[in-house]
Length: 224
Ligand code: IMP
Image (cartoon, rainbow, N blue to C red; front, side, top):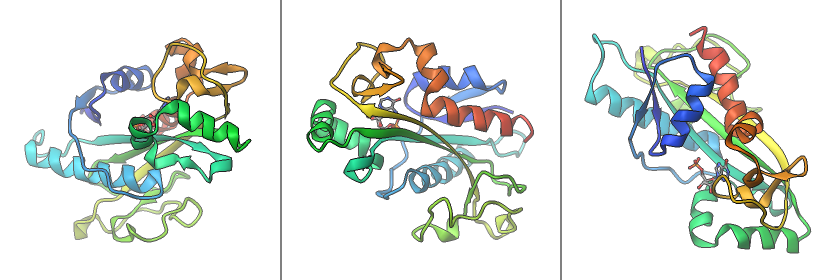
């Protein structure tokens, strides 16, 4: 059964295909992002909205099609994780170069990119280390250490949609912009002496937050 990758960005499909043997199709569904301090809540909310939209649009032989949503951002440690979940908005308004200047002015250059993949297929999940986001708990504290480290979910029958989360991150530091590749904050993010914008797509995918989350997800999904 195909997996619907919820994105308006075709590049993400190409990247997902490098990790997944599954039949991956783009699901061009623009869900409303909730304002939340964590990527986890935003991605889980998006996965539920997308799953419900897919369910309304069609089902294959009465079977729901699984969906996966990703949400990513840059977290500058010395700026309390700014811009974090607001990376896209800050990119559009303040701009990448200004974020770089702020971090360097504050001498706060340690940073990481994080990516959360949120998977929903309407069923519950067997216990694995990856967390499950439960709908009933949305709005409460969903930090990784307090979130249920996963038991079989028994709320599916009650109509709630559990979502499985896969997190990938890459450490680095904020530098003066270098390189012409990539997108977003890539020119100001250096990992092992090279900015992500100086890497080829293959080099970036091999170490990127999204690549790491996809690798974990692909491993788990193969057994789903
Ligand atoms: P999204 O999860 O793809 O919507 O990413 C949110 C924002 O985070 C983007 O608009 C970019 O500004 C930034 N971002 C996410 N991933 C990357 C990356 O791999 N390189 C550079 N910027 C990124």
